[in-house]
Image 1 (cartoon, rainbow, N blue to C red):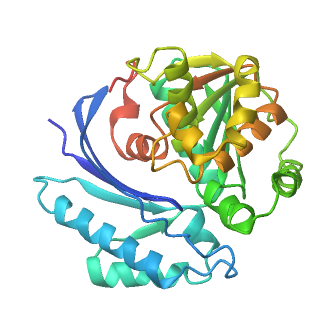
Image 2 (cartoon, one colour):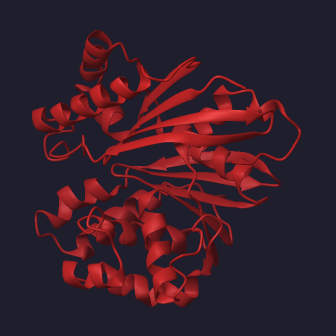
Length: 309
């Protein structure tokens, strides 16, 4: 039996602790998971990126809870803790990192967008049956993209497009979606031209929510979302409808309460990115950055056998 590994992922929208247990040289399982919707970036995008006191308090309490669980794990091999868009954008991000190290003895590594995209692509490459495609991970602050060709990660890219970012910059200020569209289009112009593929792999909460809504509409809500696929053209107009739906209609479609306030922004980003990279078929994934971090830190990738979870 291999010693377990704890992974903490602090995103702009939520923070999550997962414990992975490697069973054999080529298999592992999730043994514990805890999620907290801390929304650490709340209020930051209108304050020059500075993280605000109340969200920081929520993040501290979440990490404190995570630590109380971690110390119960016998023979723990290591703790990997990363922070993404919100902390890397924040002028006071390092201050929070230093505070957590002092108070909770947790070392937070702030990773850049390209690295975040790499971990998402790494998990998809090893835990899905894909050889070619583009991973798309829409978070609260950024959208991270990985290009996979011939079973290799060729390139990664990060866009400053996220659900909470758009919500605070546009929706909360009652700005029209036309203005948000212009903002997204400007960001997408920076995406290198070689990021094109007929296949996309959806990573993260927005992509999973859209897949669940589609599954419900097809009467397949009990199907495993991992490896679920659909043709973009069939749901293009439906996505447009989601973008302009009110909360009551979103819930009727099957959007969870935790996603209602950001799914419109997420769907808008999703639709624009999908069309930019000329995607035809979309594959859903329940794995992402956390699994990528685990795979890189364990001995499991040294095996030549197929990986299983």
